[in-house]
Structure formats: structure tokens, C-alpha cells
Length: 219
Image 1 (cartoon, rainbow, N blue to C red):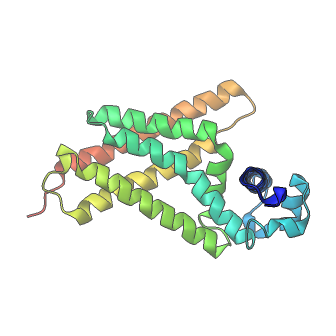
Image 2: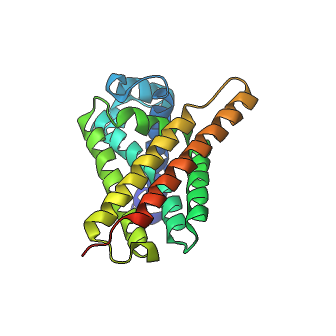
């Protein structure tokens, strides 16, 4: 067997390929902090990574496909955090507080991802808009499954539970967008704005929770 095709060599090549792919995603995300995906060219991305433009096509068909990959990367960890919060059998107030904390933590860890989703949700690249809508719909389904298992949803129709899940998801996305825009040159001012956003988010979620308690069960 040719030494260039041994499993070890193939493993190294695959690792390098994945590394380059991630470098392209990271470079695009950084560049997208200042512009929309529709205005970003692949040559700009490959120039940052230090690879030839032709190398881009070993990883993505076009910039739209790269954008779709960024959507999946951007929302994956938020899915995990919110599912974990909702799966715990806690009082409504605790779930609300933990949900807002989870969103705030996600934004602190991934501000560029949140900014990308907020901007491209209604942006000019159709494939990315559709990918964001599909991911949020899947997120809504996951939240609905968690809500349906709670005692407060006893007797609710599947349609009503899914409607409630949609309210939660829309609110969490809106809150994440508000957090990411709260950055200020003065750290103290930024923290004060974040506290105000968190307080508003909790009050709005409490209003949704109050409506939930008084919503009629399916007959």
C-alpha cells in the first residue's frame, strides 16, 4: 500500500480539511460583523484564511451553503441550553429566570453568531433565511415537546402547546438580539443596559406564563 494512502495519513488529511472548513466559517463570521452575507465575497473569506479561492469549493458549493452552515453552528448550543432548562421540573419563576440567564450566557459566549442570525433572518440570501426559519421551527418543536411534558400543559391540544412554544422561541430570539445590541463603550453602562433587558425579558415571560395558566384546556 502506498504510504500516502495509509489510514493515519487519511486521518491527518481529514483533520486538516475540517480545520480549514472551520477557519472559513470563522473568517466569514468575523467579516459578517460589518456587512451582510449577500455582500460578502468568497475571495474576501479565503484571503483572511490564506487559501486560494479554488480551495473554498472543497468545503462549500457557494457562500449560501457556508451561510447555512453558520446558521446550524449559531443555533446549536442555544437549543441545548434551553432544552435543558425546560426539561427540569421547576416552578415557573425558576424556569423564567434560568431561561433568561441561558440566553444572556449564550450571547456573551457567541455574540457574532447571534448578530449573524438576527441580521440574516430577514436578509437577502434565501437559502439562509429558509435555514434560519427551519432551525427555529425545529427549536419550537423541541420546546413544545418539553412544555407538553409539564403539568401546566395537561389537557392542552398539541396545536396550543406548539403555539405557546412559538411564543417562547420568538421571545428568546428577540431577547438575544437585544442583548447583543446592548454593547456599550462604557462597561458599566453596558451592564446596566443588560440588566434592564433581562428584567424586561423576565416580565414578558411572566406575562406569557400568566396567560398559560388561564388558557382553557382542549375540550
